[in-house]
Image: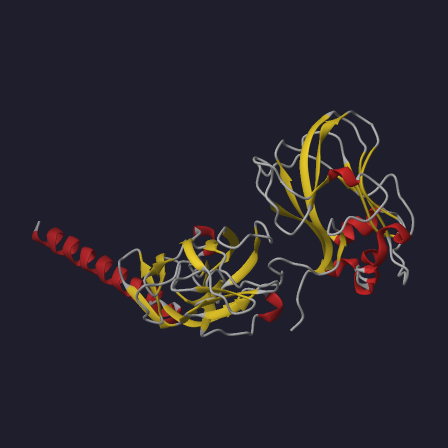
Length: 383
């Protein structure tokens, strides 16, 4: 019996030793003996896989390349935890986006936590983005009223400076929205937003007075001077840039209602305000105008003629719905969409251009809409 016990004991020891040896052999066979490590960090673009990184901006997608990374459960940049997708985690790489929130504690370290609670540190700098500016809800705001700026990376402390040097009073600041009171002395031109991480100038103009081709200051054209509002009554939309056009009437389906415009000889020099560059390369420009809908634009069609040599009764079609809820807002339309709608390329004219606003389309419209400042302006301001 003792011999049997001895044999069993020896067999058990042999199996255990074999298991330990096998486990050690497998670990030794793994890169870095199975210990996680980071070799480098790179961008994820396949054609630029040799572009190695020591830092990245918030929101950038990066590839962490190394060995034995498959058990990663968390990745931190400074004190901000990144969002991980399990399918993007393998033994040799982790794809992860740098968190967008601004870190409160700057360590310039990346930390990976594994399922066994081990950690791995790596030198990596999060490059905090300077502000980006997308637009203004309305590019015309009166002194003392509140302008709403959209964009990103609006990290306090920050300042909003208008052309002329006047600084706005901040009303509220969120990551993607700034509300600022327009100061006295704000002039037409770019706005500048400055944070501790940089400053950015807008690609649009505040109170943009460039290239206006339909204006009511003074009225010119063939049609409906009676639509021009020179002295708003109580309850009417406020003036934002001198006189404005207001269409307040019932418009029947497929009825013909010219609002403003005409040929160059009726419009005067204002008809020459569209830049040659916009006619030659419409993709670099926007059509913009200010709109105030006391009642929603929910029927019919507004046909906009701009930058052409004669009337076009079928284009450009600006269709509903649109509702500013009684506030002035800036409407932005890529100018190439308008140019393409005419079916033939635009042609430069030294004598000016035909323009027209025409309600003509399906659906009845109980119209109470105001318009101002029709202009063609560049998408990007060249530095």
